Image: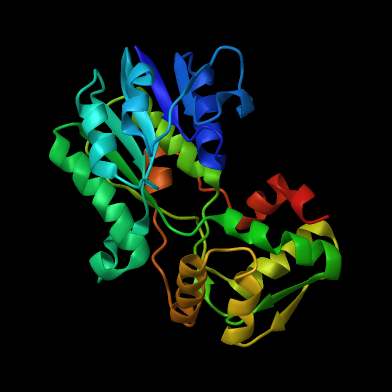
Length: 278
């Protein structure tokens, strides 16, 4: 049987493909435009569009397990395709937002909850990976670090526990290749609480030159982000920052419990992606 990776072009999905290949698994991937997907020759790439669920049919033939992300227009229709195939286990890249109070009314929490509940209702076994904020969110600062050695922020003292995408991918591979995480819902974070200011300082330390934090108003931040990010996401980002000031978010030890290794630090993430900032 093969493992299907939906979203193989993404940062996590690409690492999931690599991890599966390292374990000798037969891997299949889907893309709306398979000709644009660069993967090892051992990976069978098929065309499929999650917004047109029946197109998944050929990709699901002979597949035992699926790695799926949660950005779906019609999750019930996609899950119906999975349930009607030979698939028996789905590993979903969800979000820790589903665990927060009021998740059903929250834009981010609600969309992930809808996918989780569709899978739970399908009868398929599952693993819901629930990461917190990605360390890779710092990539949006790359242009200002390169050009100005500065990052503009409205709430530089917002506290996060950023997670390296490689940690998420490793847990996904474990879930896709064994039964240790059947029907598990691990919340995944990095190993340390860091303010946005400390993250900027870490980038400067790694690249060998100081990077300043320029404090801005919320309105200025919204105007800046709106040039690059859809409005609904701008609101989510700024709200999350505002509400994280002075907090002590939980630090999960699930990655270490599952893998037996320490979580990768934010500094490690910056070092792994240092070309973004130099």
